[in-house]
Image (tube, rainbow, N blue to C red; front, side, top):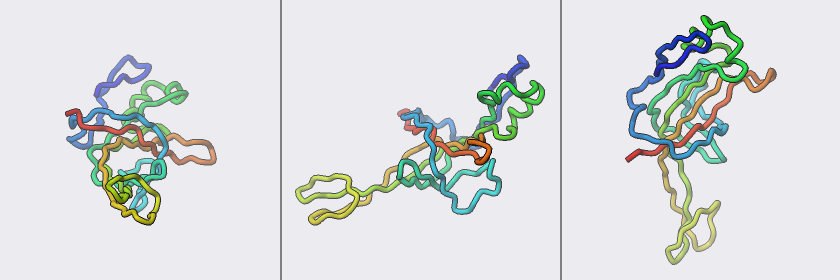
Length: 173
């Protein structure tokens, strides 16, 4: 991807793709950009440059990441941060990021489980628990999401970044 270096009139080639299959025939299905809580089997070695998590919790539902399809970074400076750096320094920061600037994206395949209650007589419905005369069946659903870690701090007391679910993808075919 060719991107402008702000304030210089120059462009640079931004290395984005770390995996070959990012360009699978996928199109966005839903855009969310909502915060999530991530799950790591072992804590990341670098907090501000994390690896792909093992799962995440979003809207009280747990998603287990079964495969990381691709990953990329975006070190574009946003908001007031876009105007507070000399052009020559901005060119370097655009390739590796700077303090509290940058996003780490991951395209992931996830599986999530849900319970479906089968009523006598063949009707089905989602349920929270068991009820007399019903049986529960576990179903597994696979989805593809783009998630990202934003290194921007929330405030002075909370300097850690935040994780977001960006969008859900589906096959273009």
